[in-house]
Length: 324
Image (cartoon, rainbow, N blue to C red; front, top):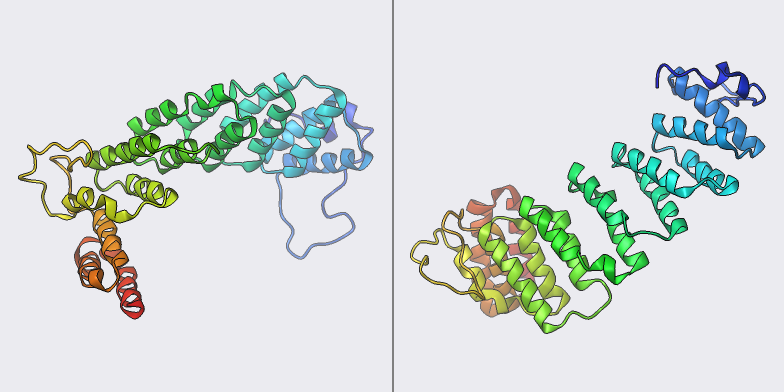
C-alpha cells in the first residue's frame, strides 16, 4: 500500500477539495498521522461534505479502512455508497471476508458484515466462514458474537442443526475453550425452545464426562453450574459426583464404574479447587448445619489449594458467619 500514490497526486481527484482535520485551529497536542493516512482522511472529509457516492468513493474508503479498520465513519459511508450506486453485495461480501480475517478483533468489520448479510438475506454460507475465522482465533469475542447473532436473527432450523457437532469439534481440540462452552449453553438452553428433562440429563452427563477427563477445567465446572442454575436444580443433587474430586487421590476407585457420576481420570490432579468450591456451596446452602463443613473447605482453598484467591475465601468465610 505504501507504493500507491496519494489521492492528492491523482488527476481524477483534482475536483475534490480535501479538508484537513485541524482546519483553522492550532491544537495543543496534535496527532501526527502518516502522510498516506492524512491524505486519505482529508479527501474522505471532502467527499462527505459534498455527499458524493461513486465507485471512486469505494476505492477511497477501502484504502482508509485498510489503514484504519476501526474508522467507523468510513465503514458507514461505504455501506451507504454501496446501496446508493447498486454495487453487487456478493462482491462486497467477498472483499469483507478478506478484511474480516485480517482484522478479526475490529468490531466495525463485523458490523459491516451484518449489514451485508441482512441485505442479502442469504446466511447459509456464513457459518462455514465463521468456523474458518475461529480456526484463526478460537476465542475471539466478535466472531462468537457474530455467530450467535446469525443463529438468533435468521433462526433457521438448518442453521441450528449442526451447532452441537460444531461445538464438540472445537472442544475436542481444546477442552478449555470457554467460548465454545458458552456457545453450547446458548445452543442448548437459550434458543427459545424449552429444554426437556432428557436434554438436561444429556448435558449434565456431557459436562461430567468432560470434568472427569480434565478435573481442573473451570469451563466445564461453570457449565455444570449453569445448567443447574438455569433449571433451578439444587447443587446438592450433584454431591455424590463432586466429592471424589475433592479428595487428594482417585486411587482405590479405578474399578468403580458409574455412568451417571464418572470418577476422575487416573492421572487427574486432585483435589480440584473447583470441586472443593462446589461442595462448599452445597454445605453453605444447608444453613447453620453445613456452615462448619463449608468453612473448613474454604480454609483449605485459602491456605492450600487456591492461595492466589486467599482474600476471596477469607471473605466468603466472614460473610457466611455474619449471615448465619
